[in-house]
Image (cartoon, rainbow, N blue to C red; front, side, top):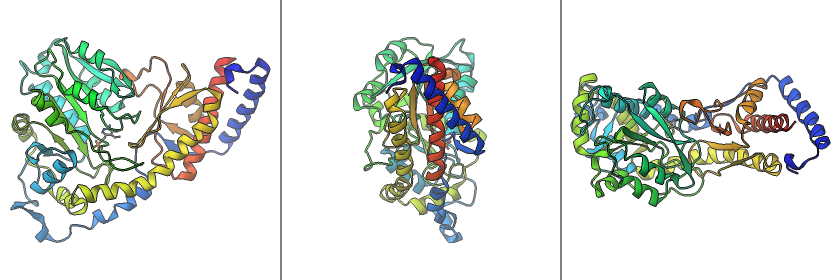
Length: 422
Ligand SMILES: Cc1ncc(COP(=O)(O)O)c(C=O)c1O
C-alpha cells in the first residue's frame, strides 16, 4: 500500500519498523560506496592483458611514427583510425589526448576562454557575460567546469528523447548563450538515448553566437550492458550536413573500456577546428603518451574487438543493474515513493523520489555507512529544485555488497518519506 494512502496509525507502525531496521543496519558498521561510476575489480581484471600487450621495442613504431619520442601531437595514426572507426568519423577529425576526456573538455573551454574558438569575435574572457545550456539531471563534473569559468548555467529539463529542444531552440537566439553540454548516449545519470529527431534538431540549430560550442560527450558510446551494440549517428557529419561543421566537439575515452585514469581520451572535430586547436595545444604540449596509445591499439585492435570486450564488461555489469532496479521494483514501487529509468547502458540508475526526499535519504544512508553521489549534484550549482534526484552508481561494489547497500538505501528512502508525512 502507498504510504500516502495509509492511516496515521499504519504509518506510525511502519515508521517504528523502518527505524528499527535502520538502527540494525547502523550497528553493522558498513562501509559501502555507490558514489561514482568506477568499474569494479572484476572489470579491471578483465583487461589485465593491456599491462603486457606491448613489450617489444620493435613494435613502438606506428606507420613510421616513433612512439618512444616526441612528435605527432594529435596521436599515432593507428589510434586515430581506431577511434574514428568507433565514433564513425574520419581519422583526420580525431585528436588523441592524454588519459582523461574530462580534461580535454575543460581544455577546450579554457582555450575558448583564453584565445577564442575558430569563429569567436574575441576570447571569451573578454565577453561580459556567458550563458551555458545544461540538460539536467546531468553529469556533475560538466557543471563544475562551466561554473568554474563563471558562466551562467541554464537548466534544460531532460525528456525521454533528450533535452527539451523547444526550450533550447528558443534560448540559442540569445548571442550570450555560447554552448551546451550533452551526453547523447546513455546519459549520465538518466541513461537516456537522444532520439534521431533530437539529434537532427541539435545538428541544424542556428545559434546567434557565431562560436557556439556544442559539447558532445560520447562517454558511453559502446557501453551497452543489455542487448546488442546500438549504432549511433556521427554528430560531426550530422552537423556538417546543416552547415554547422565547426559547431561541435565530440569527446570519448577508454576510461570504462580499459583502465580509468590510465586509458586514452580523444576529441573529434572538423578539420578547420583541428588546425585551430593543434596550434593552441602545441603551445602547452609537445606530444601525448603515444606508447599508451599503441598499447590500446594492440589490445583493442578494432571496433569489433572492442565491442566483444564490452560484452564481457556487460556480463559483469548487468547483474548489478538488475539487482538495483529489481530491489527498487520490490521495495519502493509499491509504496509510490520514486520512479526511475531502466537503462540498457552507461553507468548509472537515476532515481527520482517524491519531492523533498533526496537530501534526507542520502544523509540517512551516510549515517548507516553507505556513500552515494551527493543530492543535488546532478543539477547546475548542485541545486536540485525539487530535491528529488538521486544517482545510483552500481558498478564498483561486488553484487553481495551492492545488495546490502541497496537495502540500506531503500530503508533510508522509506524513513525519509515517513518523516515527511508525519
Ligand atoms: C559523462 C561522462 N563524461 C566523462 C567522464 C570522465 O571521463 P574521463 O575518465 O575520460 O575523464 C565520465 C565519468 O564518469 C562521465 O560520466
